[in-house]
Amino acid sequence: MEFNASRHHLPRFRLSTAADLCVETVSVASDTSNLGVLELFTERRELMSLPVLEQDRPIGLISRNIFLSQMSKPYYHELYGKKSCIAFMDKDPLIVDAAMSIEELTFRAVESGEKALADGFIVSRDGGLAGVGFGLQLMNVVANMQAERNRQIMHSIAYASVIQRSLLRPSDLALAAAVADAHLEWQPRDVVGGDFYHFAQYPQGWFGAIADCTGHGVPGAFMTLITSSILSQALQQQGPADPAALLAEVSRGVKSMLGQQDGSSGASSSNDGMDAGFIWYEHASRTLHYAGARMALYLLEADGAAIQSIDGDRMGVGYTDTPADYQWHNISVAVPPGSLLLLTTDGLIDQIGGSRDIAYGKRRMRDALLAQRHASAAQAGAALLADFLAWQGSQPRRDDLTFFVFRP
Image 1 (tube, rainbow, N blue to C red):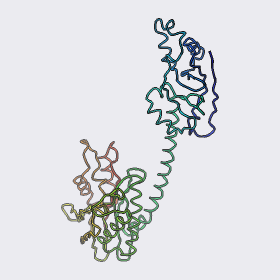
Image 2: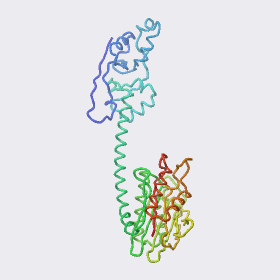
Image 3: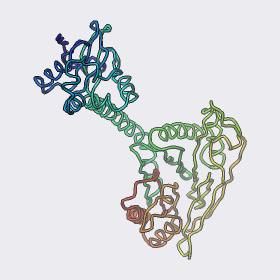
Image 4: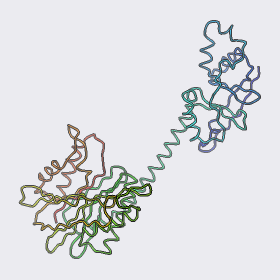
């Protein structure tokens, strides 16, 4: 009976190839008897899998559990004891080269089925035996690698959140200077999000925008960078007094930057864009000019019995089905003193919750706002958020949440 021992080198760096999983083992020649294998398993209780070699090349793998189960059957000692061990070996084990990456090894192990994970696999080098690897060890390494990758990704996303929040900071300062009584809520569903806002102060008034870009997380955040940049350029070129023209300019910019074609969504074109509400408020006349792209502005006058809905156009900004020459419309509204206004993305309205797991909805939003008609905008916004969170309960957040409550 011939036994061979392979050498095992412990990895000094992060595991990356099958060689890093290679465990020291013994092997047997193909003409070794089953009694010889039984003796080896009896002496080496830690030995779970035994490679079989022919002319120093691995041809099979004997599983300890399967072998001992077979040899414990009546008369098997007498029938098979002196016969070659190839009778009980796996003739088609998973054999991988030591240089194979962990990623490829994982795919190969899954393709090989349960036996590669349960009984292990053979690691070869230059055709000869290098050692064996085990499924539990492989799964542990893959889990650690995935955890490390996730950690790196989350670290990158966390830093992206710092960047996104920094880009919004000038708007926070402008809003605080322009509107004395307001509540602005911005909560990405994930660490970063696809909602954004933009505020700017001017001698005659102030400009405000709330937008909901396609996507959440990182894709949505990329869209906010694109659209907010285009909006900033449009404001510099056209000024703030025509919200509808600004929507059109942003739409053209998005379509141009993303390579969108009218009515087409070919392989090279994205079908992305945003819903948005743009506001220009004039101090002297107390007039609000509003243009919306699939977003409404809600107005509660001081002595009003109900909340008015100032609906925007039913056409999104960007997107392949929005005509390049589409013109949004301005709606001018005189805002009486004491009026309370709300502009929100659909993350508020569409959130599932309550005892029946249904959407928060516009009716509940209106009722929550009506209940705060005599409160400050800051208090009304805080109350609306509290009601929303109570409604959400244990339900997962469905979308980014952004809303703006203000009294001009």
